[in-house]
Amino acid sequence: MIILAMDTSAKAASVCLADEDKIIGEFFINTGLTHSQTLMPMAEQLCANSGIPISAVEAVAVNAGPGSFTGVRIGVAAAKGLAFKNSLPCVAVSTLESMAYNFLGFDGIVCALMDARCSQVYNAIFRVRGETVERLCGDRAISLTDLKLELQNYTEKTALVGDGAAISYKSLENPPENIFLAPVNKINQTASGVACAAFRLIKQGLTLSPAELMPMYLRLPQAQRELNKRMGVTT
Image 1: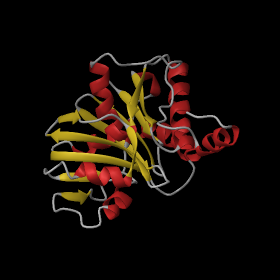
Image 2 (image 1 turned 45 degrees about the vertical axis):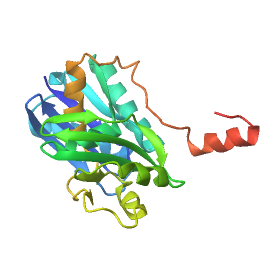
Image 3 (image 1 turned 30 degrees about the vertical axis):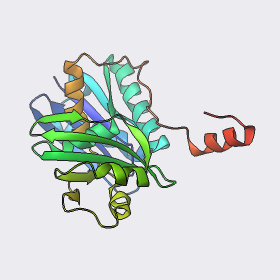
Image 4 (image 1 turned 90 degrees about the vertical axis):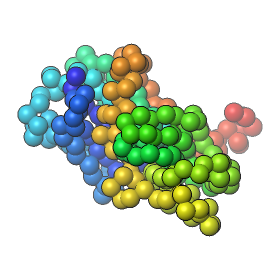
């Protein structure tokens, strides 16, 4: 089964073509260009270079959140558009979970982190043993202080991954030896990670129609939160 996977949830953007037993090809760019400029040209070029027309793709997978509100919307909208046009099922992948799949073959804890501002991070924690990824908590927004306390519970090797990894590592002040920053080739979310996570979801029958695919935000955008505050609305 060939799937086209996408990620636009943070500064970097990537697309991947994958079959169940291999990564066919992947484009990754981390230059700060807007995803609306780069995503579809990358997808089109990847299909052309791989010799795989979009008609051969059997599902579209995307990091549906959490992440940058604008970035997530762009990725989800692109996935919906491709799926509608080609009558394909969609797979909504947690951005945080996709990062754990960067560490297939690892034996330890993967702490996925995205900068949520205001001394908070979007976070989820996973245990990886070889090819098995086990989720230890749900996706959440957590303060750096609470995260620091929680990480004290883990004595295994613990990789911090994502664009919130550096600020989280710094907040530990005197990090224990078992906690480390992911290396540069694994610290960003990637479309290949999306693809690996998506295949597991597909096997569980967790696909969506294009109409059902929606962004997965953990909290309201800052502008909406400020408006609610002015209007006295509590959420």
